[in-house]
Structure formats: structure tokens, C-alpha cells
Image (cartoon, rainbow, N blue to C red; front, top):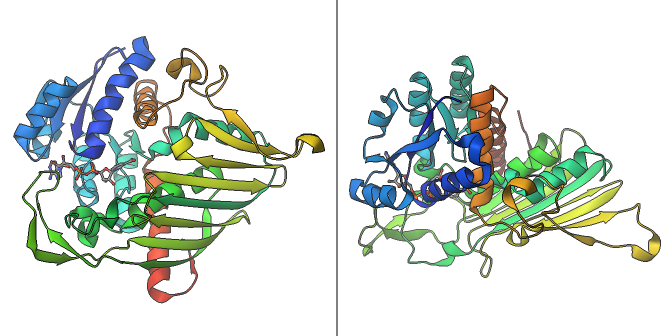
Length: 385
Ligand SMILES: NC(=O)c1ccc[n+]([C@@H]2O[C@H](COP(=O)([O-])OP(=O)(O)OC[C@H]3O[C@@H](n4cnc5c(N)ncnc54)[C@H](O)[C@@H]3O)[C@@H](O)[C@H]2O)c1
């Protein structure tokens, strides 16, 4: 196996999870990834970059992402920067012949997403979007059940992704609260994960109607160089122009229907990503805060055992249990799905396999987000292209 060197852009929340996931991946997948190195970390603040690089054992750090792209010894990049930077960085990386794993939401709109997808495809490079939740072992197990027909024909998918960190009125007006940097608020941040899950498990969206609101309209202006801590200036307030809360009804092209709710103002909810799926043969309920178990209802059970049964994920024949669990049922944390994602991406590069979720999935996701945004504005159902 030849050497494969990675560069990581972004040392904020997501960049740090990727750094941890890289180290986990080396442990979980051992020999299979022995020639892979995380060589360079790029952050806007070089001194923060140095500290992080030392912490995570990354050889080199720098402040200029274009310098990373011009390095011939970097074969693939992970882009973990605010959403508005994804397009420039993806196009530059692809232009320089590098494979790319990009954070979600993929782009600010579907038009940009299509341009990014076409560029990577035409260059014959591997491309992926970090819809990390897909790689949760419990989700892979649910997907297996669906593919085996255990739920029968699906007719309902209902999901919420709720957090409460936005309730802090003193929280800075960072990039996540500004449309030009984020594209959307809770919808792009959390709803994009639901959309990906729905596409992964149920199918393509058809028609959509959404409502959204912004409840904290002004926030203190802080750091403009995102990810760099700065003194909060309470006297200067700036406008929030993205949604805090969003609710959407939809149909799928295969005839199923469903709903999603995203919010960063759901007091008491930390990372409450839950969904339920109902089909002709059975049902499942899953909550990512209890990510090591799935509630399964199967109509094959006798009447005196009717109801949901709890399946503890990680039995020996469950997806990735061999790599992640020495003893069945020990459970996982937030970074493990990132490490599986990275492993599969690297495997796709080495062995010329298809990788998903790809930029195609990123583009389809942005199409759904665009349709929801039009629907919210025009207050009517919109067909997803
Ligand atoms: N998949 C997930 O579960 C998940 C979780 C969190 C964030 N994200 C995504 O990851 C991305 C980053 O989010 P975050 O929470 O880490 O943000 P953040 O604000 O915590 O960190 C952003 C990082 O990007 C760097 N950066 C910004 N502009 C740069 C530039 N021009 N050159 C070099 N570095 C630059 C900053 O220095 C900082 O290190 C977003 O797209 C976000 O939606 C995904």
C-alpha cells in the first residue's frame, strides 16, 4: 500500500473531531491504514494551529489554506471550515488533483453544490460529504434491516434534531447566525443531517412545505475571523438573519411521507437527533443520544410479545462491531462514526471504490434545503428538483 497523506483545514469543533477520529481510525483499522498520515493542519490562527497540531500529533500547521493545496505530497484534504468557504476550497483542491472529504452542509445552495460535484466527478477524484450520522453502527444496522425488507414498505419517516445552545442571548453573532456565511440556521446545521438520513433510509424527496422563525434577532458582534476567540463586545449588536427553528412537511418520490423539526432553541435538548420509521412490516425508533440501542417493532412477533423491543447495538455480527468493539455492546461516542467515514473514504481511494455520502448526496441535500427555503418564503408546497 502506497503512502497517503491527508491535510485538514479547520481546527474548530469539527476539525478537532476529525483529528480525534483520525487517531481512532488508526487504532480501529490498524494494518489497513498503516500508510496513512495526517500531515498538515490549517487554521486561521497559526498559534492555535500549532497547539492543536502538537496535541493531535500532526506534523505541520499553517494559516494559509492555498499553501496546503499547492503541496504535492498531500493527496487528500478534509474541509472543516464554515460553510461559505467550502466551495472555494473544494474547487481549489479538485483543481490540484486532491481527493476531498467536505463538511456539511455541502454548499450554500444547490447551484454551487452542482458545480462542486461536477468538478470532482470530471477530475475522476473521490469525494465525500461528512454526513457522519450515516456511519453510526446503529444506523447501518437499521439500513440493513430496511434493505432486507424487515420494515416492509415504508410509509412514514418523522424526525427531530434539537439543541439548546442558541438559547444563550449573549452568544456571539458567529458565522452560524449569518446567512452569507452559513446559508441557513438550524435548518442547514441540523436539518441537513435529517435530510441526509431520510434520503439514506427512505428515498428521494418529492414535495415540501416549511415554516421557520428567528426568535433571537440580535446578538453581540464578536470575532470575524471565525474560530478565533475574541473579546465579546456587548455594546455592538448585529442582526441574525437565519432561522432558529424550522418545521417541514414532505412527501417522498416513493409515496412515503414525513416531517422534520430542527431547533437550536429547544431548552434541555443537547443533541436530540431522533427519528421513527413506520412500514407495513414493522417500525423502528432511534435517538442519537441513546445511540447504542434501537427500538424495533416487528409484526412477526407473537401477539403476547407485541410492542417495541430494545436491540443493543454491537452484537458480534452488527456492522463494524469487529473493528469497534472487542466485547459486544460496549457502545460508541461522537467521533467513532467520523472514524468509520474516514476509513471508508480512504478505502475508496486505495481500492478505487465508490464512496457515499458523496458530493452527489451533498448536491441532492442542497436541493432539498433550497426547496424548503423557497417554500418558507412563498408559504406553499414546493417540488424538489
Ligand atoms: N458533521 C458534523 O456533525 C458537524 C459538526 C460541527 C460542525 N460541522 C461543520 O463543520 C464546519 C465547521 O464548523 P465548526 O463548528 O468546526 O466551526 P468553528 O467556527 O468551530 O471552526 C471553524 C474553523 O475553520 C477555520 N477557518 C475558517 N476560515 C478559514 C480560512 N479561510 N482558512 C483557514 N481556516 C479557516 C477556523 O480557523 C476554525 O478553526 C461547518 O461546515 C459545520 O457545519 C459538522
